[in-house]
Amino acid sequence: MKIFNLLILIFISQFLTAQPNCEVYKFSGDTLKYKACKKAMEVSGHYQFSKEYQTILDEAIKIDPTFDYAYWAKSIAYLKSGDFITWKTLIDKAVELNPKEHLGYRGWCRYQFFRDYKGAIADIEKLDSLVTYDIGQSQNGTYHLNIAKGLCYKALGENEKATTIIENQIQLNEEENFVGAYDYLHLGVMYLEAKEWKKAFEAFHKQSEYNELAENQYYLALTFKAMGNLTDYKSCLEKAKQLYLKGSKMFGPYSDPIDKIYLETIEREFKAINRPD
Amino acid sequence: MKNSLIALTALGVLLSCRFDHGSEKEAPYLRWVGDIEHNNAIDKVAFTICNGEEQVFQYFNIGEGPVYKNEKPTILNTFHSQYKSVEDTNQNGLIRIRFIVNCQGQAGRFRLIQSDNDYQPFEFDKYITTQLLEITKRIKGWQILYKDGVAVDYYMYLIFKIKNGKLIEILP
Image 1 (cartoon, each protein chain N blue to C red):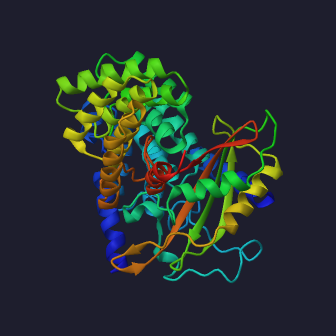
Image 2: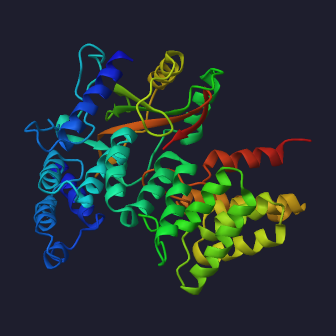
Image 3: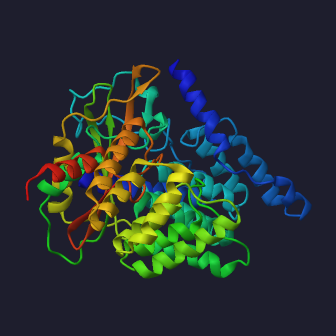
């Protein structure tokens, strides 16, 4: 059973890794990159962390040291194991060789894994300056990269700039009918912090309709509290707790998302209600 | 600290070998990237893993994200209440402490890497790294993770963001 589990992991990981089309290199006459690409494709069936996977990619790099995909693919296991030094060395090489392909990924990872807000902004803005097309989503698909950029600006204290970036991107996302799972929630929290209660209500209401979360009810409760509506404040806190215990809460497979709450966060508010002034 | 520096140096050598295409030298990978072998010199003999070296997972393999016993605020409170800041504008960057949590929720084989904010190897003041390592080692009872009802061994890590000697963030 244990071996089976590991095989399942290996199987799943293959679908999480975008693979290049080697034939493109062949048709463009780049035979060295074609050979490196074919070699790299031998990782199929091997787990990203395994020595087989890493060794095959080393061989691909030997064939063509300018094959960016191999550096990127190698970097993933180091990223996920928290080895930021080796990860950065590898991903920098991939970015150097093919910035348009890897800048967005590196920027997202700097935010998601290391809360490197300035680095993430620099990468995402650099990518934006290099391309004329939509810079696209984060690697895990949770956010448009501009939403991630907005969250980074917020973390750096540039709240107004962050709000504008996220408002604009949500508008574009709505036009594409592709709103991120936590987009309205983050925007609502920004309005709440800016004391723009009406806008906060609207954002949390949209989040409720789109993807109800414990966090959404929690921050909605804080908005009611700020407005002096203690009845709805308590009611939303109760809902937040129920949703949390049911598992309807923010989730990140590798790290906790910004604005995530915990059971303790909700319980602290309950204690505040019962505490005499 | 000395071991960490040696490990970092060795890593640098390994990477340079991998990128040196004129070299025949190959990187001696272990089973998985980041695997930590028992080292008699620094690891407690009493710490054992339950299901064998070949069956140690990564925390995220279980699909529950980073999971902490009594949730993350407990970990945050532990460090923020025990860590004593160093007022030093030269102490900036990232510190990662990685370890194995066994099927009983015990932790062992702690390893540390350090970088500046540009992800370049950097040696923090020992007062900082020793504190973080000792606090991590003192934490009793990590979350026990299960796969198909079986308690597993897994790799876990904590990343500490340090700014001017202060602990400003704990990840993941």
